[in-house]
Length: 191
Image (tube, rainbow, N blue to C red; front, side):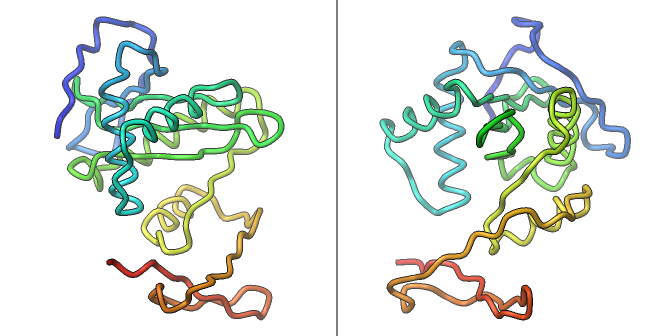
């Protein structure tokens, strides 16, 4: 699904030129404003479907949008060739807005370097006021973790561990060792 957007209606965006990708010539981030609320709600719904196989209702999606645009957060829309193709949500976990909380590029546009370009643009924004950018990813999201590592995210900062109360509801995808301890990477079984 392509969401059409006239780039020239609003000049409040920052541009990134993708030098090493023939498919993509230009991508821009635009700070969210309410003129694109309906399209942004659609993207948020698609984000949850893509990442968690969960379809939120409209109320839940509106709650996410309200949280992601509240003080201590910044939501940027990703626009490529006059199409709204994704978003990036930055948040604060105590001080500066220096956590990349959510990044979503529509599946049809993935694998073209746009996610990397978005992260590089976000880095340029965050480095003006913070010494680091933090990214958290689900352990099962190996594609995203590989991308982040390739972009230089190699400092292990925080470890989140979980105990499943109904282990039979999960499939073990892999096992990793950290500090000599074994941890399972799991995904919830599909119903």
